[in-house]
Image (tube, rainbow, N blue to C red; front, side, top):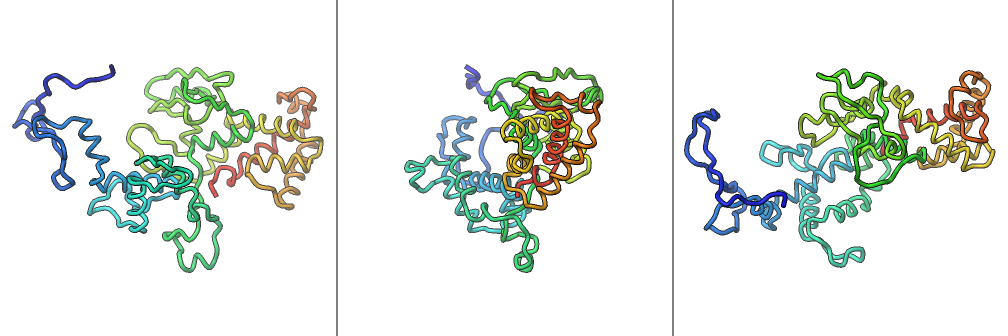
Length: 360
């Protein structure tokens, strides 16, 4: 058993002026009187299970609205209520109040559908499906003059918002495109390669046993974090520091991010994997290989101008690679080292594109 209720509840006191040495009167557990009443029994004090039931009570309009708003924020960059931490009188008004109310009711009391004939109340999976299959979510993020005239800041969602991916997902994109991703669920944390002596920058030097084998290529979700010294590649892409709660991530756009994608050890490995994958999966045809690499990174076919520029880059690199540079790369069996080095450069360019790490 992990925990159980104490036979005799602990006494809790009001601390006079916050001083723990000066106890005032007893304080009893209860619920905010301004909100819906607690439907429990009066013969005992409410416990944590009572609190959980009170939070998801159908009479409580707040829990569903806050949850729905948080999920909406993940998909659109900001919630229907911009102040996601404050639904009170000091918070901002919802941009689409009727939509927020409808989503909250649908979340609490879902309607049966062919996909879900017996829907489950408070199902996050159903809520995610509802949002991502909507016409609003599936809009293009491309800016248009006619939409800018009527909705310059996209407050009314005339188009989709263009968002840079979260730090963990940036890593996942590189792993997926390169074919290195290990899809194992759960398990120990991952220690990806980091710059030498990075762990010496905190208050005390922390051990960093760099992962090897398949565990090295697991999703960014499993990356180990020290609060004082998080992995630099995560920090560069605005991962939360762990010192406090984070309800909305910052999305910056800095030159340091491009440098990390170009030179970080992990992303160099991803480029090696992408080059290897393209050379193995596509016959000896540079145009077809370039298109395949483009699709793996950007999920679309390249335009003729894009193919031409990448082709020129490939030819330039093939001519410029020295014997020493060719020996420095670990080319797969059957691939000429200079050719592999040139394709690695193309792969690094594709993984560094803004479009690769952006949700369009």
